[in-house]
Picture (cartoon, rainbow, N blue to C red):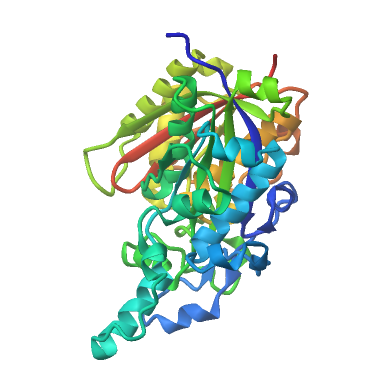
Length: 415
């Protein structure tokens, strides 16, 4: 069977930098940090991390109330990001109702804030008197995907993968595979998560959260750095409109880039500790799917969350596959870790880097941890490495607790 080429024709973002892809890219290229001190984290006794990358206030009233009443923040983020992607891709009622367009949007969990509200109310008197009828729709695992589909009357396939930090890239990979195989012409793919202090607490308990920069939040996280002390949680949503090349050309859509490879491998060695060999195999499989070799990859967008084990393992895996020549950076220093949204938001940025020939270095990286492999790390002062006339291929990694490994290969679009 001849597989179809899959391109990107729309992108949408709600990020800690604000609403829209333009705000996301502006923050990244200007080397700004979205991490801030959060006073609400004082409400959690024993929590050491006091910083997070929060989404600023949004105009949620652009979503009709009849839809918004069933949404928590994560679904609001996903719907707003999907709306931007659809607007850029010029998707209207005809495409939404045809069954040709599907949705693959996932989250790490359902709404933590809604869960807390429910259990606080219920445990006080074990009564259902205060329970709202819309409660379940905020708590179901497919809340983001379902709310996107309902808001825009999208009748195609609906998927809601949930693989923690790998969710966003998994949805892109699954959408790519469905379109390539001819099962859908278009897919809205991405991830969303909302912040709650318990999110930071979860990683704090595992000694994976940053706690040494509470008084200087914009200096953390520090991926690959000798001075890193853990990850910083964020929130938001990224959504990409994937489409078969033939459909995009027929519609006259603007093509922003191409997905040419995807792989997902499971590391069964340890549910929490990553294996660099499995990471390396995942990257090799993605390149095999893309029919490219390591020497053709111009840039690796690393998952690198600024945890000790994760950064070291990923650096070793990248070195095993690419050696020390290919440019490598992580965007977590700018955005924190937006969890299920990270794969999609970082893919949007990676595609723009390919399009404009300008790479974004790792914020807060000055001195690389000597335990990390020798790589061509892009640091803040590496201006001579960041720009070039043409970057053709990029590989994007996302790895999750539970042993989920994903790699995507993007190509700058050429006819």
